[in-house]
Length: 312
Image (cartoon, rainbow, N blue to C red; front, side, top):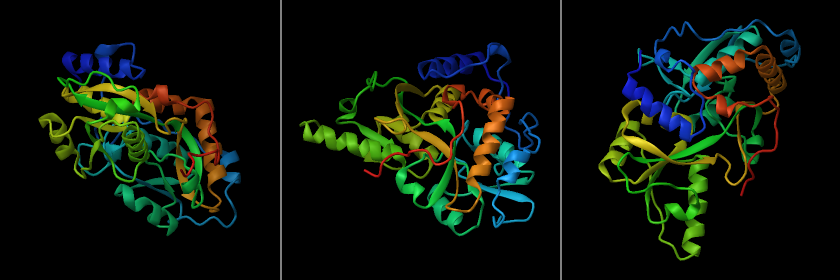
């Protein structure tokens, strides 16, 4: 769908603040929300990656790479116009990995809290869904990194809250955050730090429905939303109802990376990492990030099981 000049101006403002890249020809900017995704980059087999597959590796289906993803919002991962097909940067990365391994891609849309059990049980082979590498998760899963983890705090367009740069800036605010996420853990640490300093506590709010979440923010029932920056920036640009107040690393105060998750010891991780590095080298990886305006989150190389965020 073509984007209006008003939409584009808002998009450019939000992404400039977040140091995101926009195409040089702004008037030609489009978002493909079709289920067909004709412009999705595809890749040839990567023999070096296929050779690294363990001999005893077991896939959920013959000839298929079954990938779980939680389709919540673009540009990371959302649903196409048909309301069923997952599309976005994660879907494109999944396609490149499947192509590299010489397998057909099957994307399975799951609720975020359900992916760990589904992956451990062998219901699917991998999870590509904005999953951050942590030391706790590494005890159960292997990881192949492919993107930096960036978080954003968004407020109403007319909010009196101008900027949020430090933990003290959220003191006394009503903040929406996703349950069981890294940003929730960061917000909880900020709140503890603020209370210890004699500042007002944060009122933390949780919503399962994105529409209800946005309504709460627009109506003033909440002051801010704290979550993945790419999705929040996309929504802010789309409707103009929110604006960026601050960005933080997903591992604040440490840097964090997003990765493909596979079962621990399944014999897939090194092959996936090699596949990703092949796509970084041949330019397909950058095409995906450019397509979804996520180039600021690019990594120079994929890694298998790098140091993750600490348990505490």
